[in-house]
Image 1: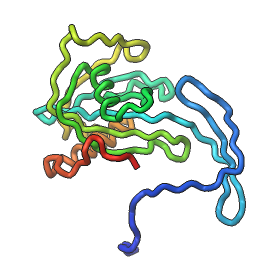
Image 2 (image 1 turned 90 degrees about the vertical axis):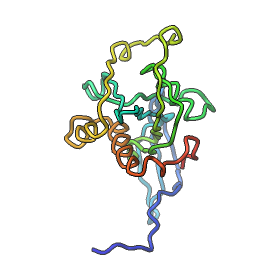
Image 3 (image 1 turned 45 degrees about the horizontal axis):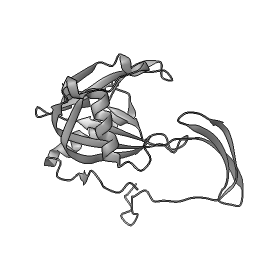
Length: 209
């Protein structure tokens, strides 16, 4: 097999015609829908998927090249997962980097002076339209207790954190010890981007395709 250098390997926007749509469930965050979609050859097929508002995640890296991970219970997976600070895009019109900064403050009690776009993900495009933008946050400082008024609830009430070297995080991702998708993608992307000192990363306000 030889590479075809004439093909532009870049995801592009495309929308096939929807001839019918039924919403089966609408919850606090997600909706479940079935679209009947026109396929090549003049046939149609039903596609079930979850409608999601989107998310952000933060790969926080300190001056010792350590990654901040938090552990959270995820009921659908029935697992305690090591993850990046992350959250839903739940404020209409809010810039994504501001959403990420808020999540870093609420979940980890840190703020950062330097932000870059690290990687953009479609978590499971065969079953959901969820988008996740993972940011790289550096030049960190802890938020003093007297300034941190956020109260954690439910799964976030018991959420330990740890700093581990970026290389160790890569090993844990590749050995199957870390499973959360934005954590794995963010760790590997940060490791790759560190080769040129993160000079190749997009700005924090880069357009989202």
